[in-house]
Image 1 (cartoon, helix red, strand yellow):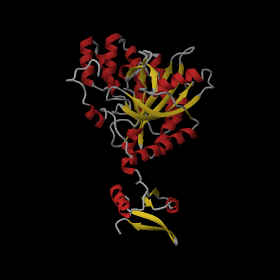
Image 2: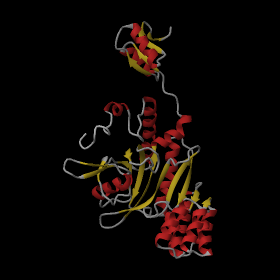
Image 3: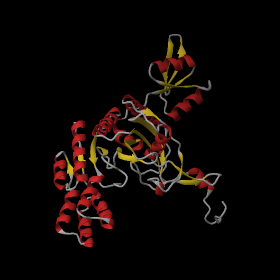
Image 4: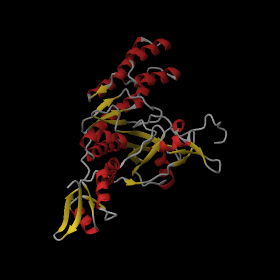
Length: 390
């Protein structure tokens, strides 16, 4: 390897036997289950009018990409810096600007595929290579559009049998309250982080550092407590002073009325407040401390001006963890001695692999190693099954 001394050069034998940290092999049973889940979700999105698109895994690298600092980058033969796709919203937004500049809007799209990040942390997982499926609703910005996405999120989780709690936030509300409190610059940025982590201790430290008064301190602590059912909206209303904060609460009330289902509100969410322009939401399944679904409202740049959009993505690896206890067993696999016997077994709902030799010992040894319990062959009365150990 040019420029690398022999002492530090990677061992080719070791590299060929291992895979990079944060990646994983997927073996047949999990592969089949994942593909079944992927098909169920895609069908669910399709029933709601979301048409499928596919975007390239390679993109032009740009410092304006929201995940630019975390993206894997490479240089092509022409010297152009490229990046492996690190999230779908930007890629689908680029597609919309290029392929659907005039709509018609609202435009409903679905996608699925792999993503890559340099860090061992992502929106929906802790892998550096992972899978997401999701939808984008482009060109409309109404409470009805946000409620549609909440309904679709619940329908998607229901389609694959995941019981999860939807949690709604509005990062701009925190920013509006901080602005109304007269906070700007470094103090406002630091408090966003402290409020998002619901760290009362850090709020106090920052209040002391920036010389903030008692009323402001009380308001900041109140932000960290805005978590729970519909009553949270009343508490948020009491904190709202300016127009932005009032509009945020009114929008959330309208969405909650249209959704008419159980929602948890977390109005202390401040994560990525400079990216999300409105409502955000996540879904948590029992037993997992990370969301299986996440999304929110944003503005697509480029074109003649910002274009409103909103969407959500499901992490396939996390869905698999949530579903692991309930996944059905694989169908039985049998070894068929001939094609008619294989077809007869498949007609019974079994999976059949074809024998490749007449050597009985070799076939039985393969079955033992493969975990196949029965063989099937054609007999006078049709398919005849025999136990491998018989």
